[in-house]
Length: 336
Ligand code: TXA
Ligand code: MG
Image (cartoon, rainbow, N blue to C red; front, side, top):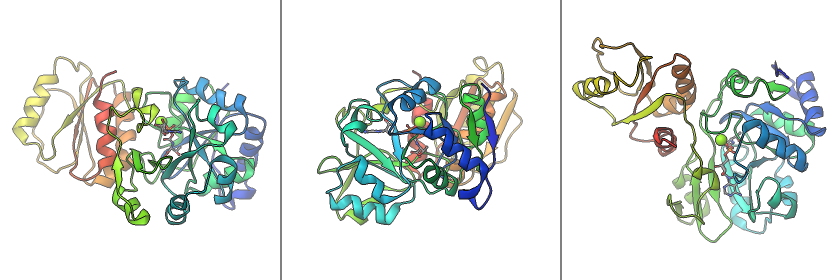
């Protein structure tokens, strides 16, 4: 199978690509689609066999639960226990948008997308193509990021094709994702509100709405932690090395020298502060992302691009703000 890439245009709800996507989903097939954060790999969340196909296609570890994407707030009632006033406060403020809530799950969702947990993660995406597709399917969509498991998330249709083009029938193309990193995941299944994965919606924004403190999950806190974070994530083939923000010219030169022997294909660098760059003793490919949001939006594309060039090491300069992008960088720099 080779995936077709189709580009829906407005009005989306009547576009043949959306209608076809909805039909494929209803018969249990997979369809990749753009969201404002990253591309998702969708399946009918009410069809257990379709959900299993996601795990096969991505080669995703079976214990990593998937997010359910809804097209109407009311769909939540079929998926989770919605007695908690915090849930309504958060979806009123942030949906559609980059916030995923982990909630007590209703029965079928515990075993399918929940992978045996008592909870289910739900979000309403903000991208009009995603919403049109969910409405066309007429069911909520299970959808993890549309990358092969462990790889950087896809932020263009071509990234999805590169990873999954041989195993899925259809990719909807909505251009590059505006946000570029995945949604904030907040666990509301207990009394505390715990961020399992930081994203562009910050702890303080959530805390303001809840009138309650919000804490980050501690890495080894099994209960409060997202099961997916046990597995390698966001990793290009090249080794990723994290540099401090504003690293001096001489320290950068030392880093490069240190990696020359292990990077026969050259060195890639993603730099966030401006500098006069000296001539380097090895082939260097440099990408500049001068602001935190530019680093967020371009990070995965740059990692994939540098990988495609065959570099052995990717040096990435940190940013001061941006808990979410720093979280992804730390994970990308871990070696599984
Ligand atoms: O922005 C996003 O969230 C994208 C787009 C496509 O919506 N989706 C995405 O899905 O990033 P995925 O599967 O790549 O990441 C979902 C994260 C994983 O770390 C998973 O372990 C966690 O959410 N998760 C899902 N269900 C959970 C649950 N019931 N309890 C705790 N964590 C859960
Ligand atoms: Mg993912």
